[in-house]
Amino acid sequence: MDLDLGGNTALCTAASSGLGLASAKQLAREGANVAICGRTAERLDEAAGTLDDAGDGEVLAVQADITDPDHVAAFVEQTVDSFGGIDHVVTSAGGPPSGRFTEIADEDWYGAYDLLVMSVVWTLRESRPHLEASEAGSVVAITSRSVQEVLDDLLLSNAVRRAVIGLIKTVSREFAPEIRANAVLPGAHETSRIEELIEDAVARGEFEEYEAGYEDWAADVPLNRIGEPEELGDVVAFLASERASYVTGVSVPVDGGSMRS
Image (tube, rainbow, N blue to C red; front, side, top):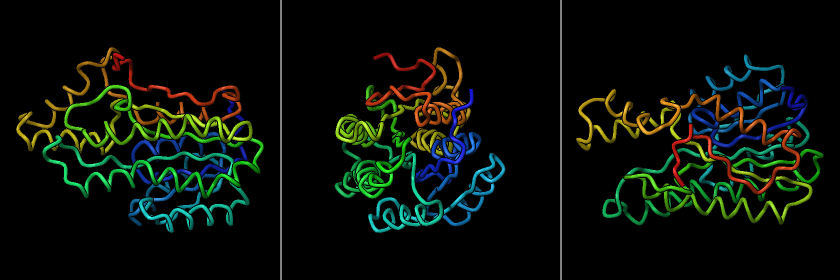
């Protein structure tokens, strides 16, 4: 399916790896110009090369920390300066530290809120005028299935990410009709974040080895496997496109059917 994204500009936060990069890659494959940001220069360079190879659009890679509002503002400004505007925004963020209630310090709570919620607030605040000026303005927030069904040892993700769903649902009404806003709720996908969570579980003694933890993540998925990041990216690209022109304010699970709620 041609998503008619050629010539559009997509700004993707925290997209130098993981599901953010997978989403940016699918947008690039559809012909969009793509701007990404990340904290690590080396990883950004690698991601930019991946995106250059993926499509015919232009690529902008900006070193930025999405927990700093000044960095977010600069990222948006550089994107507009490079491409003349913004048509689509995809918000992503690395996962907060894993742990149980008694293990989480106050600074972890505040850090998770800046990482997962305020980064989206700052991105939307800066990009909204440009999205309103576009004829195709859209927002897609990458969150987690934990917003609907809590996951063991992921207290911060379970509790804090839910604010993003309330934010997206609200702005889908406040920003309409010029801008559509949706969220995707990924389940387990083969990213460095999953590797980190499995390694943490091994360190806690829950699994003897990495392979056992990996199999445990896939065990309760009806499709009997963990997702490929590109499968999440395909959904993001669809929601950004005019093919989803009557879809706004929704939260779409992309989890192989693992969520029971």
